[in-house]
Image 1 (cartoon, rainbow, N blue to C red):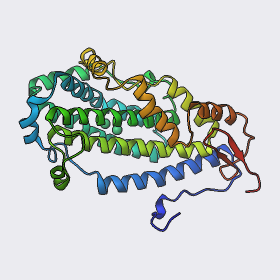
Image 2 (cartoon, rainbow, N blue to C red):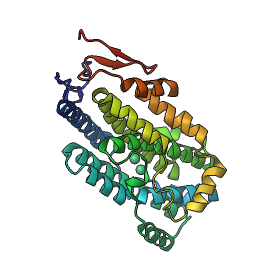
Image 3 (cartoon, rainbow, N blue to C red):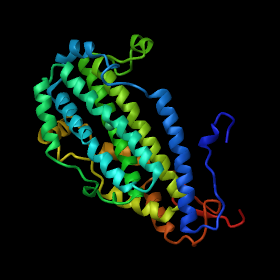
Length: 331
Ligand SMILES: [Fe+2]
Ligand SMILES: [Fe+2]
């Protein structure tokens, strides 16, 4: 620990014997520490209101420059975000008996709620959709229900975490891509201008995408942290569930959104999210973040974890970036 780290963020390694209960207790304690740190940072650095803080006048001024594809993308992402109620509801069921994860779910949901409103503001103030069109869109969203059971491996608290870790990173990547498209269509350079830097805001809809992207990467980081904690105490189960979730990964609610056809067409036309960029900008960074250099290392770790002797805890076992476990019993 360095002097600058705050004490509530310090991992506490509870000594064994490593029964299942002891491992779960350690996971719960470290998850609580991580959530407290996350919440503090959210309150300090990420407080914003989609009704009060977005530059809607600039959206009005530049709205006509947005292409039809960009508008379909934004409307599709609006649909995905509008299933927030189902995402939160499903999580609350899974985390019914886990106070920390329940609270994280509630806080996460409160942040996600703002994203649908932000895309609504962008579409409305850019002149892309009227209030009536948006009302009709929301009514169609409400006709369907999203369930976590549509996604492989999402039936346990650990599976939900792993799915969220990947999904939030993918969402961050998508929103960053849209932010760059908007800048280009507005006639702005890719890098923010000195003027934007000085006022601390990007222009119009680009600012909405900037501020939401910051939330998404913070979400990725907290779910990643929880997965890292699980990996230390339940390596076999964590790696196995990662394999399951990765193998069937799909973004949520894509089949439910009202403009799904146009959205999917716009995604493929703009190459917003392809199998290649998913690998390069989502999957590989996720693997590296959990400490593995590539897929071969990941596959090795999945297999080797099955052979780990029972009863060893994190003070005895560490995972190398090539996927090999190093065991030291002298610790
Ligand atoms: Fe979101
Ligand atoms: Fe998110």
